[in-house]
Length: 403
Image (cartoon, rainbow, N blue to C red; front, side):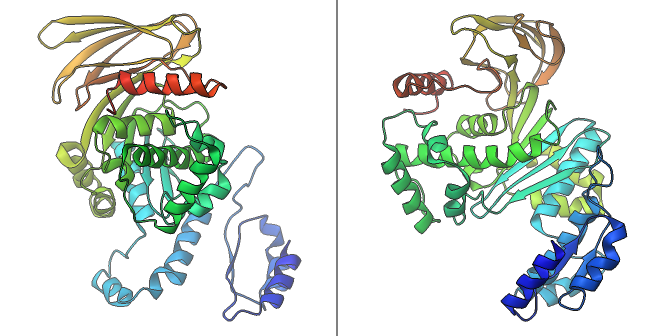
C-alpha cells in the first residue's frame, strides 16, 4: 500500500505533496519511512487496531485534528492573529468542541449521551458511553446542502423516497434533490419541500449513525442533543423531535434536547477551561428540552398492544394508556415538572431489560412532554407505496406535525 501511495504521489507531482498519516503496525514504521519519507511529510501514531478485539483511535484522531488545523484552518484569513489571542488554549475545530461538551455532559451526569449536528456541509455525531472515552464521527458527504450531491452518491434515492407521505416518482424526487444541491442555501417554500428536506436530514443522520452504531451496537441512549439549522429551524418542535428519533432510532428511555441558540460549540470550548461551568450552563436554559421518548425494542402485528404506561404526576394524579404497535402517542408533562413512570412492555418488546419486563423511572417534562414511540426497533416500512404512505401519514397525525 505504501508503494502504491508513493507511485501516486510521484504521478500527481503536487507541491507540497499531501501529508501521510500512518497508524498501523509499529514494526513497519522504518519501512514506511524508507518508502514515503523522502517524498512527503510522514506522520506516525500508535496502531489504531493494536489487538484483534481492541480499537484505539484516540491518537489518530488527535493527529488528524492537528493536520486539519495546519492544512485547513491555518490558511483562513486572520487565523494567525486569532490564534495569537489564545496563547494558553489553542483554537480548536467546532467538531472537537462539540465532542468536548457531549463528553463532559455524559461524564458529569453519569449517562450515555449522543449528540448530532446536521450541517450543510457535513453531519457530526459524538457518542459518550459511561466509563468509555467519547467517539467522534464526521462525514463530509452527509451534508444537507453544500454536500448534498455527495450524499446522493452515498445513499440511494429509494431511501429518501421512503420518508415521503405523498405520491412522487423517483425521477421527480431525484430532480428536486439535484436542484437543491445547486442552490444549497435555499429554504423550503412549501410543505413538500419541507418534507423532502426532512427526509434528507433523516438519511444523513442514519448514514453517520450506522457508523457510530458499529462501535456501540446495543447502547441505549439516556440523552440526545440535536444541533444544526435543519433541526433547530424546524417550524414545529415535534418535527425536530421526530427527525432525531427517526435518524438515531433510540430505544429505552431517552431525553431529547435541542440546541436552539447555537451554543454547543461555544460551551464545548468553555468546557476545555471549566467543564463544570459548561455543564451547568448546558443544564440551565441553554438548550430546549423537548421531552422524553419511551421506545420499546421489538415487533408485533399492527393493532397489538406494544406497551402500557402509567404516569404519576407530582400532584398525585395518574394517567394510564395502552399504545398499539406501529403508533406514537404524546402524554402531557409541562417543562419543569417531574413524573414517575411505570412502563410495562408486552412480551415481544424490551424496554431495557428482558423482553416483557416492566421498568420504573422518573422523567422531567419538556415542550412536548412524553413521547411513546411504539413503532418498534428497527423501523420497518411496508413494501407497497400506498400502505407506506398511509403508515407515514398516521405517524405524522399521531404527533400533529403537519396540516
